[in-house]
Image 1 (cartoon, rainbow, N blue to C red):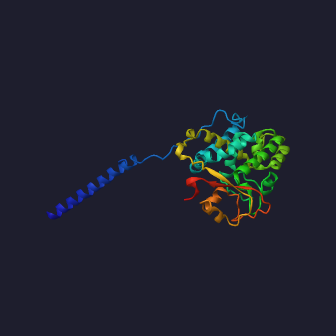
Image 2: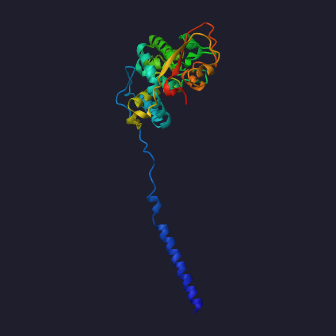
Length: 307
């Protein structure tokens, strides 16, 4: 009798276990219903109906032009951290660049070329040796009035390098007659564009087949212009406090040698690091200045002088 009861209980247990497993296998996973969606919805960034660069209309009716711009918009809109950083830095740099472009009669849109060249990095240097915010090679820098040597390198001086860039751009415009091709030639070089103009019997950037970097170059500039002019439309929402502040400075003129810039910095309640951040064109810890040239050194004011 006891053996029958045990057998019956065993059978009931087995039947119950099988029934439970079948029910579980046939039921929907309740956890799946509670799984959150993705953190963002990936949508194509809007392409403007009309777009101008330096007063020249971008031919967006051309499928190749439209798709090339679309590519650079996608790259920059969805490279969130880098593009956000550029937007935050823009007021600090544009405050310096814009007046120089205006004074030298260069279209304001060329301020975006500085981003494409260096990403607002005053100390940027390319593998080929181009340096500073406008990425001048040594020879081109000297041809456009910049001092370049082991002690002073004005390619890293934002005001002087911007003026030199204006001079170079004017010369290019005299050669090509349109600002879009001027922008492309800044990347490919005048000789590089000239060879392709002769080879392809076309004169305008949008009609030229160029190397991959230059093919994308102007569209990258255009993408910066589009996003920077309407950041909210592309998902970048910043309040006034989110932008990096414009830092006030005063100018100290130096017309003699400086033995040690670390000591020089201390006399202005600075450390060497801060001094070099504001004056990256000073390439050594000293300035020999045999010619008694007058140099202007930026000294930050107030709370920006030190940590």
